[in-house]
Length: 164
Image 1 (cartoon, one colour):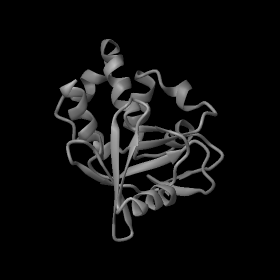
Image 2: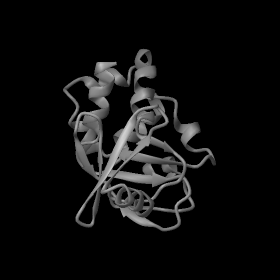
Image 3: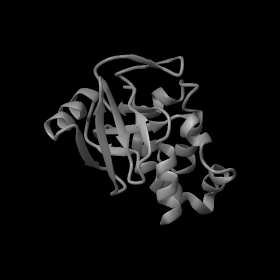
């Protein structure tokens, strides 16, 4: 459990892309357009910044789940975030025998329901600048505002700017 929480904390370092399952606008991420008509998997495979995430989703058996029509928001860690993991950690997580731990780490980055920066921002402002949300994995993620930016903060205090 401690290793799992450490990994979740490290994945929030750097930028985080909040990809909804049914967004209403198109944005550029990692040199690729993120289309509102596509799900996170369909969009992530075209982003040079999310190749590690796509590999992890495949190894974790989450491609079908995240390709469904169910409403959810993915806080998609970039390759940069995965690169901050201690040496050998990602390789270990991608092994078939560690699928359960990998799935736990990845679903810590998924929120049930559709959320965009504006809705999370509004919630945070109404709560004095901070708001807490529960992940699909069951963990808690804290969002906070600073200036015009929205950040996500995990339990260990690591921060990442939410870019979409």
